[in-house]
Amino acid sequence: MQVASAAGVARREWRFWIWAAGALVSAVSLISLIQHAFDVGMTPLFAEALAFYRALTHPLFDLALFWLPFRLAGSVKDLLLTMFLTWAIQMRYFWSLPRDEIRAHLLRVSAVYRVVGLAGAFAIIYLPGKLLLGTNMLSEGLGAMHPYMQVALFLVVFIAPAVGAWSAVLVARPDIAILARQGAIFYIYNLAIMCGVAALVFALNYQAS
Image 1: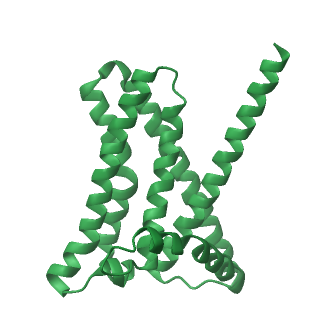
Image 2 (image 1 turned 30 degrees about the vertical axis):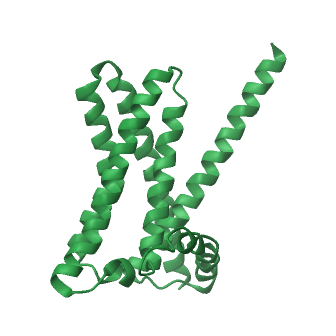
Image 3 (image 1 turned 45 degrees about the vertical axis):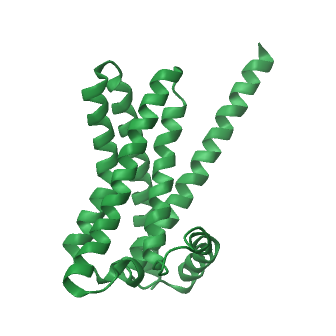
């Protein structure tokens, strides 16, 4: 019993540190996204940290998306990474559920809404610029987008998947709606932590500048 208890404590600690590392990387990707999209000036310390993060993560997207006829802008890469990390946060909750059937159903619903959110994000970025300006903002960057379009983009990327997945589960499987609601709350809680860390970094950056 003591061995099992010790193993359970070690597993919980390991999950906590994985969650903490994921939250930190998610916050950094969100900071980089905001800095790219809104061209926020950064002090040398924060600028060097962001440069290191981008040098570490952005080449991975170039490698994975080499087949595209254009190269994605840095802000779009930050957006994609933030989407994947927030998805991983929600998946972590669903994987912790005990019953395989419920877990599989929630994972499927969440995956569908994440794909829809990804397609919607690309449509919001690509179509207005291509139709109205004749430019590809996937390669030009999010800074060229109208502020209202940026707000719509962030809502599609970060809020809609959680609300949509919960709503779909509520309609299809009302018996497990409470689990989906808890997953949505867990996701939004982690998103709030990311935004809080980003706000703190920008506040420190403003004071240091």
